[in-house]
Length: 298
Ligand SMILES: NC(=O)c1ccc[n+]([C@@H]2O[C@H](COP(=O)([O-])OP(=O)(O)OC[C@H]3O[C@@H](n4cnc5c(N)ncnc54)[C@H](OP(=O)(O)O)[C@@H]3O)[C@@H](O)[C@H]2O)c1
Image 1: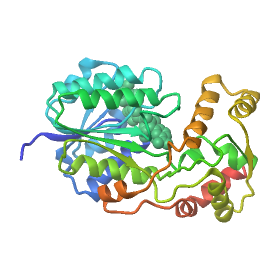
Image 2: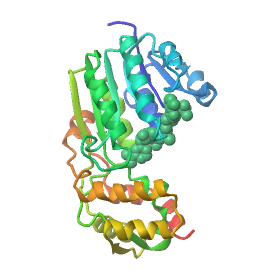
Image 3: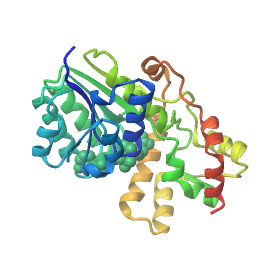
Image 4: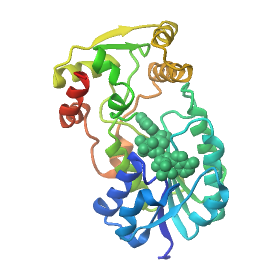
């Protein structure tokens, strides 16, 4: 076996830090076999102290990537958070991985990246295509479902107002926890390569927004009122809250995505990859009950 290493980009992020934890603790990867990247090395000091090699890499700076990806065999490319400059930045990362002789690239994409109406889907689609067209021999494209955590990080207003405004109608969403998606990404990085594959990482249950609200009420004691709207009505309501136009379009296109069953799916691929069942929504709600109830009352 070659002594070339595993590499995780975005290791300082919420997903990346959980991936690294799974690699070191769940999958027993030796710290010396792992490289992590960030734009600010001091953000990963704790990992450096454990013996993990920390390198600086900015997808917007191809020169930094040549150095950062040298000596890497398997690489996890975590999609960056800033939409807009993402396509060019991700393509820089794929080109640098190819140049460095990476043998297996894992990429965190999104559900239905090739047909989703979500405003940023084209960035994932372009990255998937660049990976497929690259000379990198093996690729695992993980089409990640929505995180349960989005309830806390982006849609807390549902809990706070008690009203769920939506144009997703009866669209089903097979969401899952960030923790489970981190395990999936870590597993994909260490598993033997198998050519170029695209895997849908979906949760164990595919639910409409109304069914999710019922589970939230049952666990949290909330009384969420579903407000079903057309896309135009939803857009007008959100604009009325003085949200910036790009956020309004993001929300409306996410609900289109859900309505068009782009977020629907089953968990077989997740189970085959990780050997585990994904956490169910009710169990995730129970595990985060105090935080969610505090949010609802804030
Ligand atoms: N499925 C979902 O529901 C969902 C929800 C939210 C986000 N996401 C996607 O999943 C990704 C990971 O999620 P997360 O929650 O871990 O996000 P996060 O905590 O915001 O982490 C984003 C990571 O992107 C890295 N990054 C940003 N700009 C970069 C650049 N120019 N070059 C290299 N790295 C850069 C950051 O690294 P440094 O700052 O250390 O350089 C950071 O570690 C997000 O970036 C987004 O694409 C999915």
